[in-house]
Image 1 (tube, rainbow over the protein chains, first blue to last red):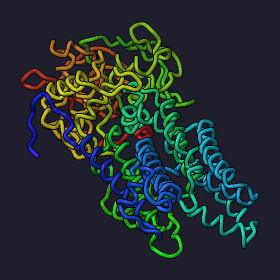
Image 2 (cartoon, rainbow over the protein chains, first blue to last red):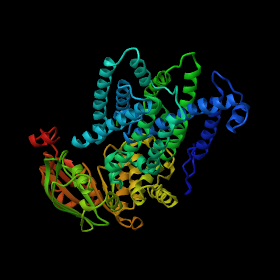
Image 3 (cartoon, helix red, strand yellow):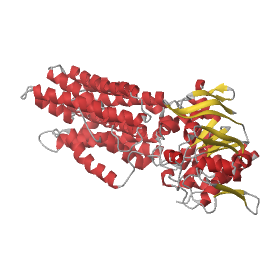
Image 4 (cartoon, rainbow over the protein chains, first blue to last red):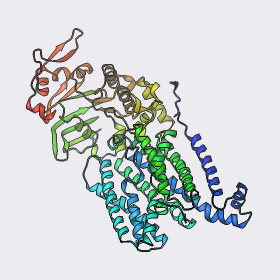
Length: 340
Length: 273
């Protein structure tokens, strides 16, 4: 592309227009997903139900069953993809997923412990959230105690260690759990699912995701600079340690909130930021909204498939893995750089 | 104005060099020469406040650098690392804009003025055509120029360059050196102070720079290139006989002494190689 050398150079990558287009597509997808299900609805029925008119059965289906589920899929997909984009920028590696610091392993342990103790659903979700936050907290704490020059790599390695420990504890609980009652629930939770989700489940997660997104949106320029590495970011005028701490805390809050809601849904946070980056470039100011929008749409499609493909629900994590794994291999084959 | 007094540098408890004194003012070029492992990069990191000094002080405009925020240091000193490949395909203009970070509030985005400064920096180096290219796909020489442009956009009075000509071809090396000289000596750039490290003593001659010759855990000599880069000093530092000759155009160049093919390395040179 032969571009001029004039003074007024604006960034040529499609930015706001594309993000606007993605939003429109997303609304369309959501509308379609509300129509699909065992009790099929016409567009007209959905519209009137949304406006609180029409037959009462359609209203119940739309408001009590479809909308919570569609909303949860949008929220979880957007959150995981946004967190993934953040972690990839922070850890300077496009092959990083949001659970790199052990948030999924910790949340899994929390939820499994909750199921093992036969806690109510809300308490299981709470335990998952606390477990996810605690795992990353421990990683950060140990990270400050280990004196290493490469802070990022140190954190990643400690994340692997803590994740493995949490995984071992989870396995122990699975062995001890009641095989007829608790074990299926545990297995289902660890594969991720949005079945049986209600508005009451979504309400606590939504504000936490929003609270986590605020610092990411505000610090979007600094996150770009951090992706050059600690030393260079500091030389460019950023207090790298403090900024990284805030960003990790925010991304972890987002991930833990939706993992508590939906269980462990892998691959979204790894794969979606790539697609977003291909569309809008690596600049975090555009990458964050693009990732969130594409992630929301992606998980909505996958979840709609999960609940309509077969008579039995297919676990979300299974579908995202089936789609994500080949994509990941394709990315590797394209030869992008790994750890720099 | 950057000043180091009786500085000791190293990592953790490992001391690399001691008794370093240096000052650098606007319009000056200070050239750091010394064998591999003598601590050039460590000295840079210490001067930039990225690494704590093991002794002595670094003063920026008379104040200890340890008491300053990163943003304040970055507004005074720009750092040009060796050309690298970032993990993401940022545009050249975005990379240069990152030089503006220290002048932005914590939550701010680069605005029109920042963009103008970035474009101006690219233009000063004659690489405005690269503005929308993918930085990660540029050649090493182009990347080095982009990083220098980023330092210009930072509008700092001092620029620290870590081996700016390492791994560049002959043409790019000449071009980068010309830019270094222009940065310090041209009125258009308001005469910045430049500290650079190099493995090529000829560059110090070409730049007519002040030279700090590092050797054996301290400073061997400090002064104008012509005074410091003598045959005996260079021979001592690099562990092999060196001849300094004057070309017909009056420039000085360093050569290994004739008849000294494949000199055996001293044990000390081997240790630090």
